[in-house]
Image (tube, rainbow, N blue to C red; front, side, top):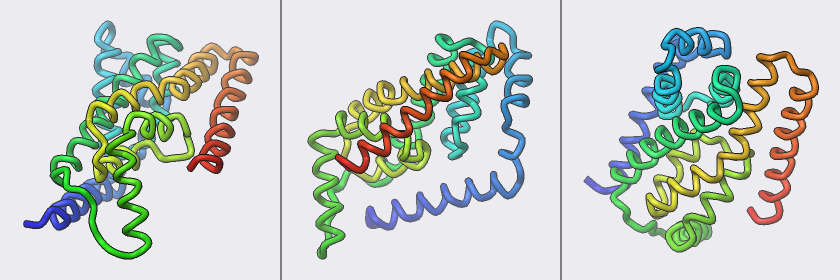
Length: 213
């Protein structure tokens, strides 16, 4: 079976799973309150359970902002950031490796302007993977869960992908967990500060994507 066909089949299976999850309503109940109530019941094991839940949600292409805010409300900004980043990196790595293994690491080929552009991008990912992934993760205008699978279609090295992802999501994760902690404590000044931080990161992301994207 050709690599392209295998990738297409793998993506179709993934899309089918995501559609089933969304249509069945499994992901509808994912709110800050519901996740917080579920995780808190595990006591000392709560951080570990949260990491597993975050990883699974990431694989299922569930937006992680609610979970990251919940992490801050549950564990505070420091431990919350560690748990959110750990869960996100595990889920993102599994998503990436799934597509990468199916694709087989073959370089892109084809003719025409679009193919030429994709080939140049793939070569850039192969030679400057860490910096590119780090930039993509720092810029919050690119959907996190979509990038996980999309980057698996490129020749970026797994090591560059994992470290670029882990370092790149720390600022945004801290901003969201700080917001979650402030929200749970009803601290107005801290809430405003966290919101300003999120807005600043988003604005910076838009600026960088236009200038260097």
